Image (cartoon, rainbow, N blue to C red; front, side, top):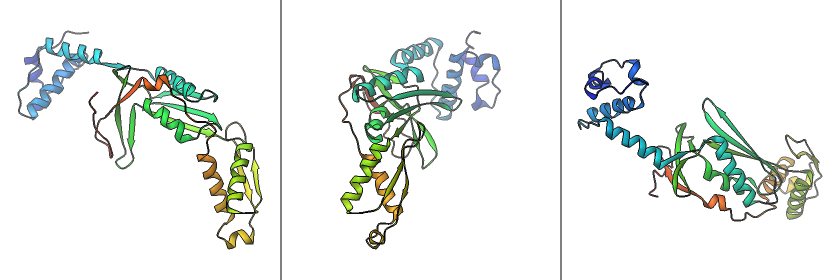
Length: 258
């Protein structure tokens, strides 16, 4: 790695003076930070100048104050938190790293509903998405009191249900509304899980406003919110703290004091 360029040489090629940046100095991280700070301070007309010693201190302070976890390490924490929260449920936790970021996919059968699981794993998400502006922002968190950057941008949850589980939900809906419609349930496969194959139409039900489509929708809604497990306290989850976000997205809260 080449030595850091003296500040007076850097000022000569600073973007604010419309100069060009030589490739060599970009290989040194302190030079990159110099350009950013010099450009920013010049734009604000502050005149801030940092020498090499000050920049070295900034790098050391940042490295000591924040820990960066890989997506795989984040997945280990997610797996531990879910095992502690729902000890009787088997979860599949798979991490993926790609050019645009990283994510974790969590899958399970029956057990808790998706909202319960999302409430656990969302603490380990390193990013948030603002659909209003199509913006991906950063979440700030802590682990054991130290600021940390979790390696997974997003954690997706996918619950599959079995035929007996869906049959129970169908029976509940039919009994609750006093309907005599026939509901045919297919057990599906290991990739899709059980699903409603058909619901027959009955004139008596339709007269009350319950079409076959409406009955199927109500059954699926009941199945999605129904849970077989309550969440237990997780020691792993208790190690995690929320320190806010970057504050740029819609509904963002900004950084929260630790």
